[in-house]
Amino acid sequence: MLADEYFRKWIALAGYDGVTNYVHMLGAGHVRYYLRKWRNLNRFSNQGWENYNKLVAQFWHHRTTKGGDRYNRSKTLQIARWIQRLMLWRTGVAQRFFAELEMQQGDINNDGDTSYDTDSDDDDNNC
Image (cartoon, rainbow, N blue to C red; front, side):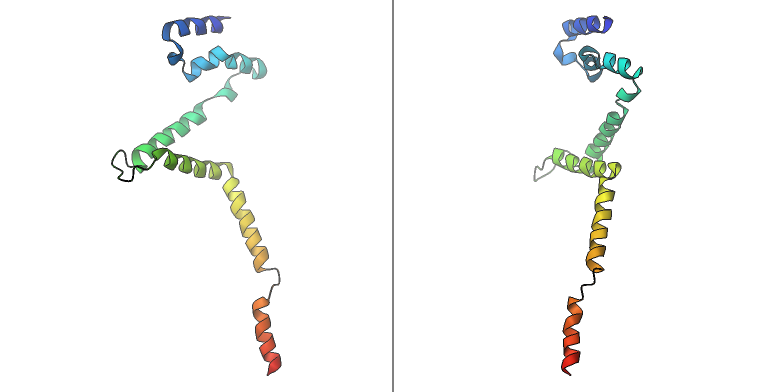
């Protein structure tokens, strides 16, 4: 196939360090697989990942101290935590978590537990 021939020539020319994401997709057969399965490449788009890469770059350049951090904290950990929060909210997991938490707290508050009121009732009976 032409893609396999291109991949072999590219490796000979640029070596394995020259294998980008798109060259890998051609050489590994991912493009051929998706074309056979879905007849298009729409499902194999990297636009979502490119968007996250842009967000990470913005985070790195605007929300971290680049080089002057006296505590020498890892910037990767800051970015990973931010991405985790972002993914939780964008996928709806965070909304479900807080909705369930709110329901549980509502059940605790509305379950008829009147343990605080029983002491005052006992005082009324003793009078």
